[in-house]
Length: 342
Image 1 (cartoon, rainbow, N blue to C red):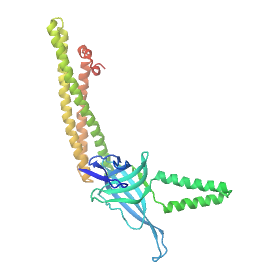
Image 2: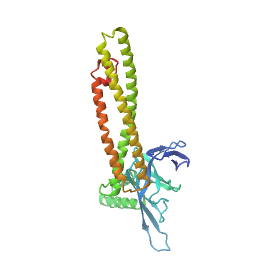
Image 3: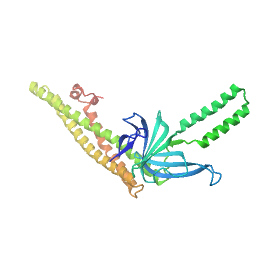
């Protein structure tokens, strides 16, 4: 399953997000605009209406809507998005449990402006009428306003006290009338069910990355060992043909080295099978977490996976012992396989 995002600027598809762990940055191929992305399930949502100006029901009124979204991302972290938009109505078409994407322009690696929110569950999206500046841009604007008041005061020979008053009024007015967006990473609470589950999932995802890397290493090691066996066999055959009596000790050591390498290959194949089995189990657990917020036996499965991985360390340690044995064989070192000589 892949999820589409559309560029708020040119209205064309940006990219298809993979279902598992989407990228945190995307680039529109049409207009080359780069966006940051927060993708995940909306676990909490709140909106509060603030009356900026209300006199009577017959006179124009001005309102601001404040939103707080907590998003559980695909990599099992929490993101908290707080922003405000003008108006009285709740216009963002997302609800708790929906899979959403938050799209924003970037300044370096932080949010510059919030531009759109897509709801992948319903297929709806909301492009903000005016991009909402992020916290950093908001602070820069405030500093610019204050600096402008101070410079203007000095240039006109004004009173510092009145300048401070006008600066304070200007800042308060700016804060009241403008909107801003803030994206943060809430700390997981290990005393709550949600925090415990996410911490367990993060451990699994960490193990998943390590296992994928280890499977690649073991597969490469098997191939290298197989090549080394063929080289030792060829060397053994040459020694046998030249003078079996003179090279008897070397022939014996070569035979023993081949036996050790075959044991290593067998151990590696077993580890690859076991690790791939663990990877499938981890995938099931992560997918389960994505579908359901809580399952009674979810943590037990996580514990089983970690316990099984601990048991497989014995095979890894046995492999390391075999490598140390191979280090004593001159024939292996002469073939230029440096890792066995270390």
